[in-house]
Image 1 (cartoon, rainbow, N blue to C red):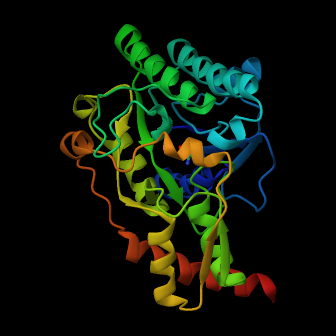
Image 2: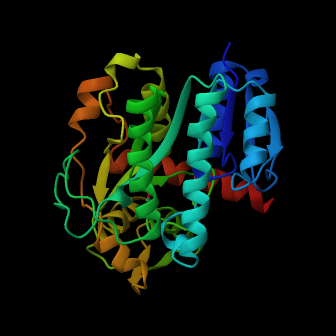
Length: 317
Ligand code: SER
């Protein structure tokens, strides 16, 4: 039986992945962890854990006889720029601790998220290939690129079964993202419902790859369920779903909220967004383990609006 540790379980991805893994493996086999206490009660065990504390992380893995780790704890692109050195320390030291623990203890599989942030200005922007120039400009991107190299290294040198996805911007109606450059694509929905207007921190034509959370969860679980021999890429897989600009997203929201208006005040995040791809070639993920997204922009937008309207009206009363 698997015993699964999730780090960063309170985050945007972690919150929903924890629920899905509880359903799949049974609540008794899941340990969620985070540096902060969860905002609501979790179905499974929760441990307060700072992954930068190597000894604490290793102790949890050893004592709980962990067999799989979903290591999600990290600082994202925009927030990471406020303390680059800490971003490096947190993102890198925790990954290498877990990879080393996999050599010592009985961990048989690791999931570690990478990002479109591994790409940079010198990367082809359209249909960005799986194997291409990776010269990231942000500390977050640098840690994700170094992490990809570490994952492939530990697989080749020690046979550690570590699997990874280069997530695009993730959009969820449950948990807010924490300090990314793609966060506007979540904020805009809340503002559209609550105030009818949104001031976007990226300019109108900034195309970025994005994905609805149910697709991100499906990709993660499908990748982890795939037979070992199907996983041909041990750095991290490109995965795509939708690509749009703030202007495109505003137009789709206006189909449901016709009076919605958007203004643009680009800030420092514009430069980060400009260094990232517009859309991604994910043919390797499709071929190797059958990746296929379910949500296009229209479907994503109507599902977000429906769920957020319900959530926000419940939170008022
Ligand atoms: N959504 C992330 C960010 O904006 C990209 O991985 O930082």
